[in-house]
Length: 167
Image (cartoon, rainbow, N blue to C red; front, top):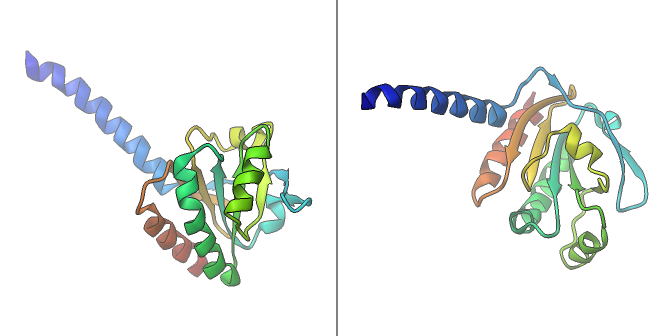
């Protein structure tokens, strides 16, 4: 009787694991939703204008501890790979940008920071964890998705950046 109850649980676990892995591996045929957002620099950044580059979109918030931890690492990646056709967009998801501006003043970055005050882009990309990171290939397809951040994830980011740059 006990093994009978275990089998449905295993099926659900296997399905959940498959969904989790597919979201991390990415769907190579999924076209990235287009958007335009105001940047910290005062211009409007449009995803469509970045076609032909490898794009990393990092959704973050100033109150998010893991976001704060990974931001300096993202800056290093941006500086290293931007000459090779890589761009990084930091999309702040807070309705009020005051805290984000304050945090960025203390931890400056050179990559574009965009403001998604109304969560329109966050909804387009189904962001449900902070931080969330999306990788888009040169053709405009979503290739990888990461929800959350833990120390060491940057190694996987680097491998994915290198893979997409070589394509």
